[in-house]
Each structure stands twice: as C-alpha cells, then as structure tokens.
Length: 286
Image (cartoon, rainbow, N blue to C red; front, side, top):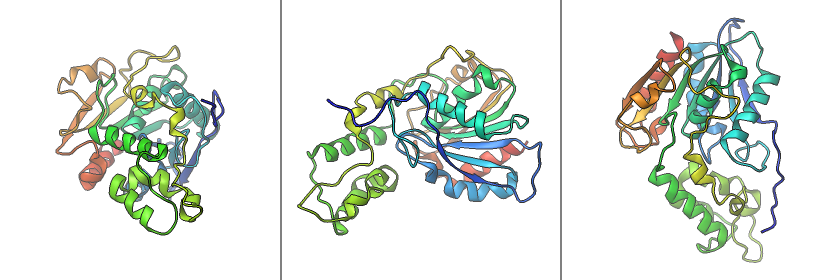
C-alpha cells in the first residue's frame, strides 16, 4: 500500500492560547491534551469553566494527525511526546511550572511528559481523565466499535454518499459528534458529485495498528520510570475498563497520587461535566 502521509520525527502542533485576565508570572501554565480521534474542541467548554478560577495561561493542543495539526507517520506515544516537547521548548516560558489535563490518550501523553527527564522539576500536577500509567489490555467498547465503523465507512463496506444533509445525519446517528468529526470537517463531503462516497479527514488505512498502540504504556530512554514529586489525579469512570481497582499500580509510577471515582463510562468528561470540572479546579488550585 502506497502511503499518502509523510514520516516526520517531529511536527509543529496547532494550539489555542487563553490568556489570563490578571497575568501572574509565577502561576503554573495549564496544557490540555485531548484523546484519540478528538481535538482541542474537547476542552472548549471546560476551558470556559475553569479559566476564571485558575487565571493563568491555558494552551489546548491538537496532537499530530488530529484537528488542525499536521498529519504524519508515526502515530505513536513516542511521536506524540516528541511533538509536545518541541511545543513546550518553543512556546512555554522556561521559568513557569506546568500543569497538564489529559483525556484518555491525552492523559497518558501527559503522564509520559511528567516522567520526561528534560522536564524534571517543571511539571507540577497532572489530571489524567480515565487513563492509568500502565498498559491497558482492553479499550472502551465505544472506542473499538466506532473505530471499526469509521474503517467500514472509509472502505465502502458501509456506503454513505456525499452531498445534502442526509449523510451528516447518518454520521451523527452512527458515530456522534466526537467520533464523527473526522467526516464532518471534510469539506468535499458537503458537495454532491458523481455519487461519490464520503471521505474521512485521515487516511485510516495507513494506521492499521493504532488502536493496539493506544493501549501501551511505554517507558522510553528519555523518561524516568517513576516520579514522586509530581502530583497526579486520576479521574476514574467506574463503568469503564481503563483503570484497575488496584490503585497501587498507579502508585508504582506516581507515588504522590489520588483517585476520584465517577459513576460513568469512559466518556467521563461529558457524562459528569460539572463534577469533573469542580474536581479539576479544586486539584489545580491547591
């Protein structure tokens, strides 16, 4: 199979920046990282809720192959973290501590960054939304099911024609806004032409192993195996398969941790929005 996308060791990530109303040069900067197949839009409402309480610079990222950031191989945790390190090195003042909030895959990226040797003593706190610092043998059923649906649509096994509004309604019914956004943002899908089928923003056939890769927790050469100075909050969805009940597994990597439980699936940030926001604010303000 010929590849459409280039291979790049590092890419420059797209991000949005919310500036504080009352700048404070010593306040920790907050960096948000979305989950698999998401984008910076995931944090749009959350940022609006938390920014008045934190009154600091908030950067919200699109990781590679997502949102408005460049598309390139590989789509792996080492590549994600290298891109983020480039962003931090070029965009974040070196005298400012850093806090992270990451949802799902984004939480795992944030925890890997907290272990990175080049960021030693710079990362203060991490909120990992329904993801742990260890390999997860399974992923939420909704992620697996929607990834399969996306591939079925892209391959033409599930035929949805371009044009009009019918295709958009079908996509939202099948995938919802979050997982369907890769079709909704593709401009050609809105034009009816020669009965062509809708397209996805990313050539998914070039990433056959990406879902398996997302399960992995990887300690790379530039990472420490644990960090006892970073404060970690894991927000766990009790109906999700992501975080084990044995919380000692978290403590092996981040001894200074706490877990807050939510009666939700993996879509914790959406199902318990107010509780999730309050938890993040209370944790980061301390």
